[in-house]
Amino acid sequence: MKKIQMVDLKGQYEHIKSQVDTSVLDVIESTAYINGPEVHQFQKELEDYLGVKHVIPCANGTDALQIAMMGLGLKPGDEVITADFTFAATVEVIALLGLTPVLVDVDPVTFNIDVEAIRRAITPNTKAIVPVHLFGLSANMDEIIEIAKEHDLYVIEDNAQAIGGTYTNKNMQKAKAGTIGHVASTSFFPSKNLGCYGDGGAIFTNDDDLAHIIRGVVNHGMYERYHHDVVGVNSRLDSIQAAILRAKLPHLDSYNEARRNAARKYSEKLKGNPNIITPTGACDSEGSICDNCDCHVFHQYTLRILNADRDALVKHLNENGIPCGVYYPIPLHLQKAYADERYNEADFKVTNQLVKEVISLPMHTELDDEQIEFITQTVINFVNR
Image 1 (tube, rainbow, N blue to C red):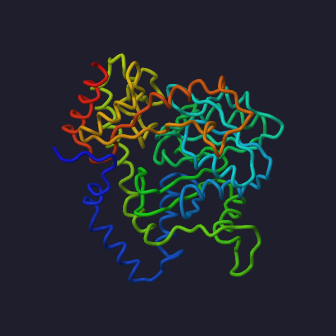
Image 2: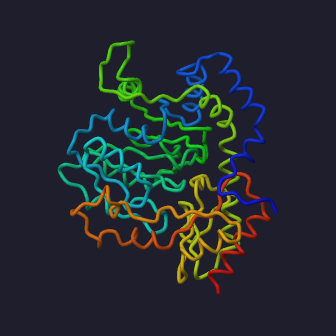
Image 3: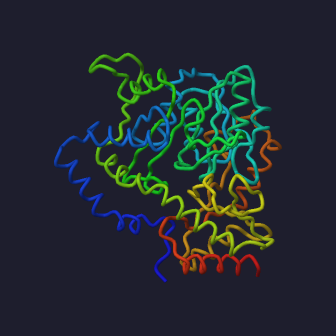
């Protein structure tokens, strides 16, 4: 059996090596390193793929989320509601802009923001909701959009983990994750489903006026050289990374399908174990993944471990050559940087439980059946002992 990787970027690269190498060398030959043709071509190709009017590339996913909020004109003191169970970047940018983070609990099945918790958290100062499409599954956008319309709020999708995923609304209409709210951000960090070989990110929107503002923000507030019309930042996707992303974008659907296939195999082998809760797609709450699933792209394959020591399982897997991750071990409301006397522990029952139970198994496009068999059997042997 080949060595198990948490993310096998080298194995993925081997399949597209010649195209990536040629594309990178072409950029070096052109010397158009910043805002070159590759960036503009990637922007257009991603717009076509997503079915969104505007893609604005930038330097990384955290910048993308911050710039989206800057583009909306949110002001210090404005409240922004988001999930307690996610990576810190989501709340980090809210705090950096002087906005007021309002953390709420999540759903125990999908791990995404709890829509009823959103409703309870709204005040006259609330200006935006940031649903995080965690681990590759879209949040309940029907309900979130309805709440936003009712209270005149912005919806900013954090799509760092769900690019290529599809959301099917209550009218059975489909849209790509990140194209449903007012604006969205994504990350092209190397381990993402669509990842470059460094840092990169992008903002998506269908709003022409907002797109115009954001294009200025990412480039020092300039629309014309040396004319600074808005307060901006320096956040640009470089041409080499754009060239790599262009090489990978045509494979994104097959990458996501490979992840779904691996997830199905994991779940089939782990099903029925009373000590394990497997992840689910949007259409099934019983821990299965339908054959035609397009809602989940499995950036992570995350279990809940019951009646067993999760941390001891992490150690056991590592001792057997199986990398794994705990995403996330500490709720944001308990992090020093974001602790606030406004928060009541009783409002975070699900998150406080999840951080004790979750474990993410290796998930990438190169997983094979032998590896999946070994990983699942090692997990089962531990939780059953």
